[in-house]
Amino acid sequence: MDLQLEINQLTTQLHHRIAEKDKKAYKKIADQEASCYENSKDDMEVYVKCMKKLGKSLDYHEKMLNFKTEFVRRKAIECFHHKIEKDQDLEPCKQEAKTQVEKFIQEFTGSV
Image (cartoon, rainbow, N blue to C red; front, side, top):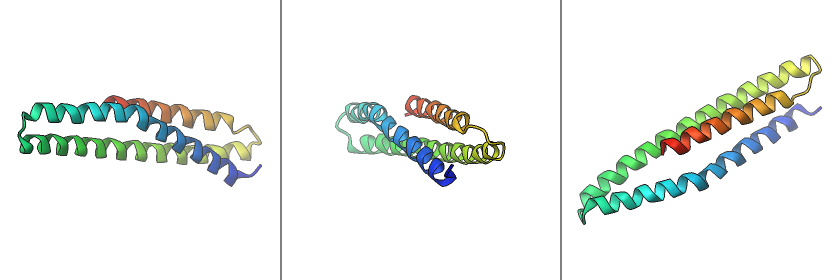
């Protein structure tokens, strides 16, 4: 068993899943941008303040998603090491990581 290959594959899968979240989140973000414009009533400063607030919120939630994902990835690697020591299957480690990241993605999509 090639541990580095397993780690790379899991990392790729997690990053791919996060990239897919962008599709769902972009729709919500686009709606919020449109709302900023509509609520500005042709006042550029109101629009800019709204967009700045939206941008800060989005940046914060993206960072949190990335931090949480990195933590889960590291926990999965730790799990891999324990499973390899006991000559056990790595699939439970992978599945737990994927489940956790899926939860984080749903939190992210709900937060933006």
